[in-house]
Image (cartoon, rainbow, N blue to C red):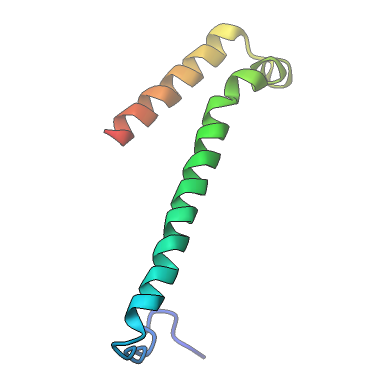
Length: 82
């Protein structure tokens, strides 16, 4: 049975002439991934206001309770991003 805590074997080193092309390949994909991830995160975070009426009905909460939940989530978000 394989040991999940054992590190993987070392990968072979790339030849020096291949490094710039591989670096460029992954650099661009990393930029796109971070950019798209932030866009999705921002859209989800800002669309809560459109879901509030449905949340009020489904969760049987009044506006004050939902406001408290959203206030706490914004405070936590603000404290983590600074």
